[in-house]
Length: 339
Image (cartoon, rainbow, N blue to C red; front, top):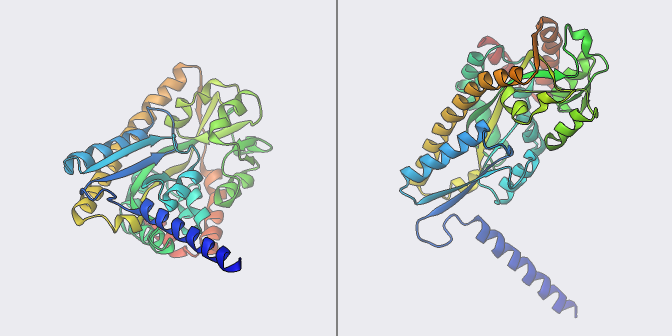
């Protein structure tokens, strides 16, 4: 009986191995055609993410004369970035968009430097960083630390993040005791706690209801994203204070091991498509930053500016400590020199 059980177990393991191998095949039909599942977590059809993914699809399919098919999912295979990262690792998705915070869950802590509040002081500064030496260095870190499970295809933006809540911020002191939906751990959580706010981890999909029902006092995000979700129409999202605490970075990733199995021609096309998607997504986000701010004001939101220096003063030592903790002091210095 023991031998029979062992044989059965070996048969099951062999079957799993075959199934896994098949799921990782890049051309299962042997006809020279490949299918790429590309996904992001935003459900709005107007999301800049969708504009970027559709451009990726357009270029990949046109340049390959149809030998590459791209299937785009806008929140349909996961509205949480953790789901998308998992699917990329398992081969259930091929190209995904994720934030630094969720990348750290894979053990690549270095990427979270890009989440640090007030790391960038302008969009042009952000561009110099991600499109230059520092951006390439971070891409290498991602690839090596993931053992080629993640290959960086490009940097997308998610706009400039601002505070919005039940009352405007006239000074940093107004944050004391205010609950704010944001990342609750890591450098982002440390920053908001240092301002006196109370970070809360309500999921993005539940945030409208949370603001509507007074579950959380405030949140923070960029105009295109929170206005598309109508957060500004809730009692706790009406007042927008332009803190500009984050010129946001997003990573467009492909499974590197699977990418290496594609033909050289297909690899070149995918890289071209990714480059064009970067341009399209950034353009869409920058355009929508203006459009959705105007829309928010037209629909009753009240926008005010604030002296950002007290926020910056709080952020700087947090950046220093965090960079030392994750071993990227040199990268932080390079970013500061590019201001």
